[in-house]
Image (cartoon, rainbow over all chains, first blue to last red; front, side, top):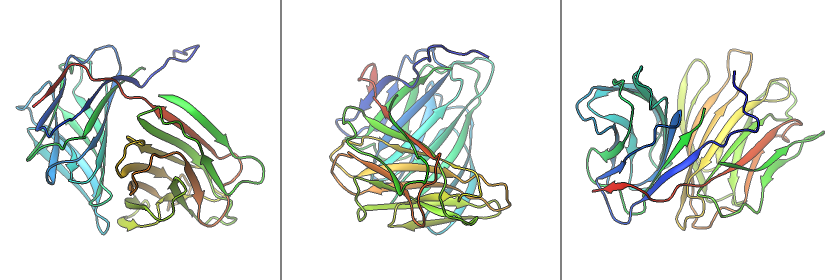
Length: 163
Length: 170
C-alpha cells in the first residue's frame, strides 16, 4: 500500500471544450498517459433525441458491449447493446448531463471499460457500463451522435485521476 | 477538485445541512454525504436535495431498486433518495451539479444507497432539474420526517474545468 503524505491532488483538469456552434463530432486528442483513470463530464444537449457515442482512438470497427439500466418515470428497464460504437446514453434537446469514468485507459494488458451516468429529468435517468475490446492505450476520445448535432453551449470536460 | 466545506452534525441532530455563500469560482460542484435520519423506528426517511432554498422549481426523475424489484418515478419534490433511520447504519450519497453558475436551467444527478442489514434496502439514481437561471449559491440537504442524526457528514467540493486546448470540432 502506498500512503501519500502529503495527499496528492487528483481530478486534474486537462481540457474543456465549449461548443460555440452546433457540432456533430468532438475530439479530445493527445491525451497524456500519466494518469490512472479519466473522467469526462458532459453538460450536453442536441438538435433532437439522439444516442451518444464515444470512440476511443476513433475506433469505429470494433464491437463494443454495453449493459444499462434506466427509468423513464414509470417503468424500470435493463438491457444490453452490442454495436460498433461505445454507447454513453441518449442526449436530448434539454440539458442532459453525462458523467463517464474510464478506467486504466493507458493500460496495454486489458480491454478498457467505463461507467456512465446519463441524466435527463425530462426523459429518463440511466446508468450503464461499456467495454472497448482493445488493449491499446487510449490517446484520443471522439464523441458523436447517431443523428443530428450537439447543440451550441454543450460542454465537454476531461479530467485525469491520479492513483 | 477542492474541498470547500465539510459539515459534521453534532449531538442532538439538526434539521438540515446547508452550504451557503458557495463561491462562483468553480465549474462544477460535487457533494458527498453520509447521513441517517433521527426517525426512531427502523423506517426509512426521504432525502430532499434543495438548491438556493427554492422549494418550487425542482423536479427529479428516478430509478430505484429495493433488493427484489425496480421502479421508476418522477417527483416535483427533489426526493433524491432514501435515508436510513437511527437503528440502521448511515446511507451514502453523492450529487453532481455541472455548470452551476450558468445562466440556464441546471441539471444535476444524485446517487443514493441505503445500507441496511435487512432484506429490503434501497438504492436510487436520480436526474434532477433546477429550473432557474440563477447561479447556485446555497445547497441544502434535509429529510422529510425527522432531523438529520448526529455524526452525519457532508462535504462540498468545487471542480474547476480545464481550458481549451487541442480540440477537433466538426
